[in-house]
Amino acid sequence: MSTVSTAYDVAAVRADFPALRAGAAHFDGPGGSQVPRQVAHAVAATLGSPIANRGQVTEAERNADAVVVAARAAVADLVAGDPGGVVFGRSMTQLTYDLSRTLAAGWGRGDEVVVTRLDHDANVRPWVQAAQARGATVRWADLDPDTGELTPDALAAVLSDRTRLVALTGASNLIGTRPDVAALTALAHEAGALTHVDGVHLTAHAPVDVAALGADLYACSPYKFLGPHLGCLVAAPSLLETLHPDKLLPSTDAVPERFELGTLPYELLAGTTAAVDYLAGLGGDDGDRRARLVAGLTAVEEHEDRLRLRIEDALAELPGVTLWSRAAHRTPTLLLTFADRAAADVTRELAARGVNAPSGSFYAIEVSRRLGLGDTGGLRVGLAPYTDDADVDRLLDGLRAAVGRA
Ligand SMILES: Cc1ncc(COP(=O)(O)O)c(C=O)c1O
Image (cartoon, rainbow, N blue to C red; front, side):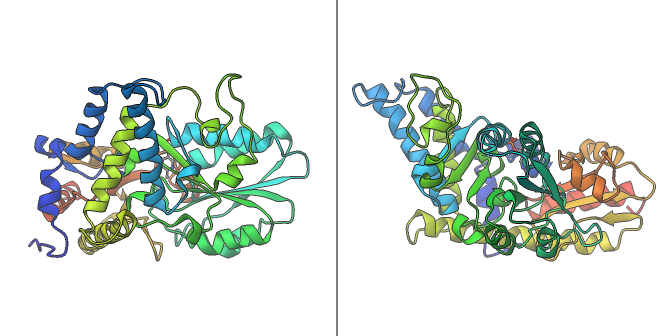
């Protein structure tokens, strides 16, 4: 029987998400969350307002400028960063490729770059390819396939005084593992390396403080935290000042604009601000936006953890289901495989019941291979701020039917 959380008004949250009226139970949030109407309205309102290139002469120019300034402030509040170090781009993947080439301009033979087996490929391949192009060496911090953990020992084993950069994840989008990022970045810094933390999955599920994480460079994607489709990179402006990406001759050399190629998608930036404001709104009315964001994301984390434990308890009763999400500290992201069934078949059966839980490796291909799941991966159940007990009931009914226990 379902229990209802009193601390968090999930019914009120759900009422804000027009997409939920279509009726599906969405466990596909790690691939991209649904969007509250406030975000959709902000996007539409920006497109319906006078808008031009950024400037201060016309109303249209001032609108564009205000949208950019507001979005940088919003993302800075979300991750406790500096608005002057918030870079926007089409996606985290695009930003990471661009950044990897820029950083790699200073690498050569003898330099080392560390990537991990826990990461999404967007925080692996750009670094591997950039290092190879410069003759630098790539070293791999291993994932423990039994526990799903990426330990400080695993990182220490591949660090040296030649390490220039450590690219690691804040949380795995495949199995949810939240490594001890502060401990890992402390080791990287002791070795004299920069850290690039992939916060795409983490940012949707917990309050983030980039300084506390020790992230010199932090990447996230608003479409994973209730916003529109684009990516962000956050760093100290002083660090960005030292980097010189390729850019057009007439475009500004100012930071952070130096890193933003071409005209920014103003409507999506307005949607990003609205998403951050929405998350802050989940934290009540007290304090500034940062304080409300911490409260809101803490409430989201508690809500999602309660539902995750409900699912895990039920899974333990289901024969032939393997749960690969095992780390001590993790997001509500469960990877499942089935003894007698292909995960993709179970995904199709769930979809026929209006339960969206896709299967694959979700580009965390190194994780999938290290777990022995090849390139196939498994079925991923991801929770979001709008997930409720009725969604969980539908998921569990569908899984019971899939393993013949209905
Ligand atoms: C952990 C993680 N990192 C990176 C990415 C890539 O993000 P983007 O689609 O913004 O390039 C994803 C997308 O699924 C992800 O889950």
